[in-house]
Amino acid sequence: MDINSIFSLISTFAIIVGLFFAGVQLRILNKQREGEASTQLLHSFQTPEFHEAVSILVDLPENLSKKEIEERLGDKMTCMRVLFGTFESLGILIFRREININLVEDFFSGVIILVGKKFKNYINEVREISSRPTYYEWMQWMYEQFEKRESKTPAVPAYIEYRSWKV
Image (cartoon, rainbow, N blue to C red; front, side):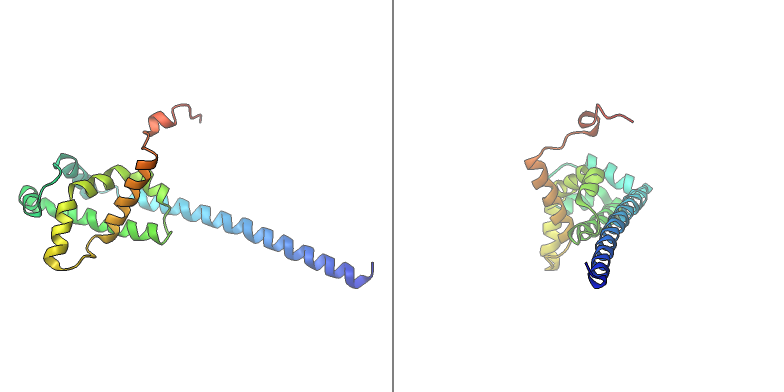
């Protein structure tokens, strides 16, 4: 083997090692980004307004009209609009793959599905009144994604699914 072949082989090996190293670094970077996103997600929902909105949501019956919901909630409707805006943002981030859908599903699928069911009429009426079918479009998209996923694989509570988990 001549010297040029040896240098060519070394060069090729160096490129392969460099590509492997770049791949490993990219995986580490993505894992860090996911960790930061989950921490940010957790902190963004640890507010009194979010907890109040969830409390309101749980107590609200399904199939109410826009008028019935607004009369029933009064000033507390602002909390729900903040929740809608937050979920609208999450839907966009999931769609653009900025946040992993599994992460959001683990945190909020129950609340998101409740919002979709209990505010379906409200959202449709807001869209009709405003002639804007795009209001809360990403929140609805996200809700429908979670419903599809749960229709294929029903949600199992963590305390059951991971009962045998070891530290």
